[in-house]
Length: 143
Image 1: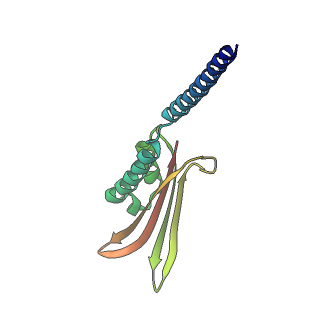
Image 2: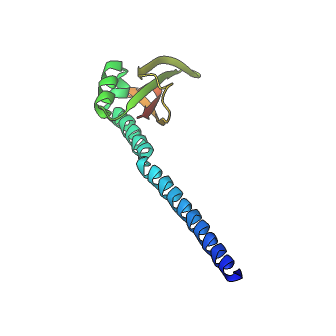
Image 3: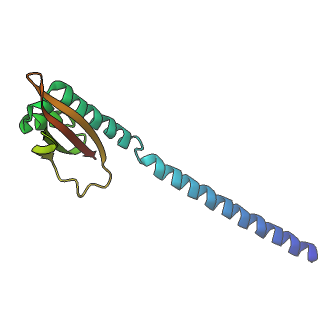
């Protein structure tokens, strides 16, 4: 009778160990599948898109035009149905110190956005070989 009791205990320990291993395996599979559903590249792609959009605005002269409608249409075309965005630009004159000249704010409010990425670009607006404005443009993008 002593052998029967030990065999039963060994079987119970094996069954408990199997259940623990199965629970750990299923937990790991659930965690990995939940991670797979998240798009881990989205922030990097949005950051690159924001940097590219600001560079394009600067190189095309849209930032230098100080034209909100032109900047708005360019950004809408850049992020068409891919992401939401908020754009802010500050233009400064320099005469013994930086003095705010023009501020532009476009896009939608980002206060409800969970994860935003941002890009910033400093630029100079030249007119007739002289500096007209120094500027800072900030673009926040989210999905």
